[in-house]
Amino acid sequence: MRFLLDSFETRFNKVLAQQLNALYGNITAPNAIRNLTSIVQTGSLLTTYYDFEIDSIYTANARGQNESGPDNAYDRFILYLSYYSSSFLWNLPD
Image (cartoon, rainbow, N blue to C red; front, side, top):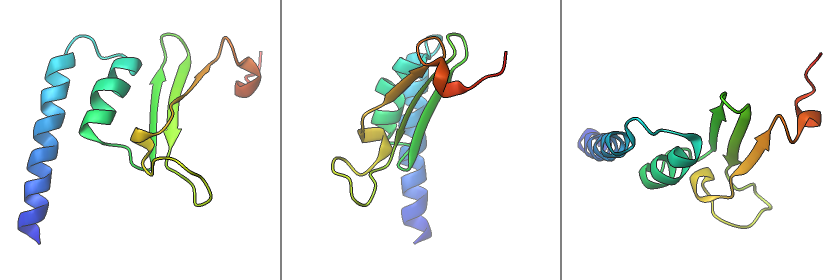
């Protein structure tokens, strides 16, 4: 069992390292969604990226029991929320 886990960890780390090197100096939320999360297949339950520069969130969750579509968050629709276009969602005090 440990051999299988070691093999998985090695492949996962190799793919993650390759993607991070490819994006070096240009890791943005859209790039990470397109080139990290989906390729490395990380974020099976929840995938969320915060872009503090433009006060935005990109998020997706795993398929619920009574929902259709892909099982894992990294394969599902990414919801984009922006403070500037959806300030009522943030409920921030003045």
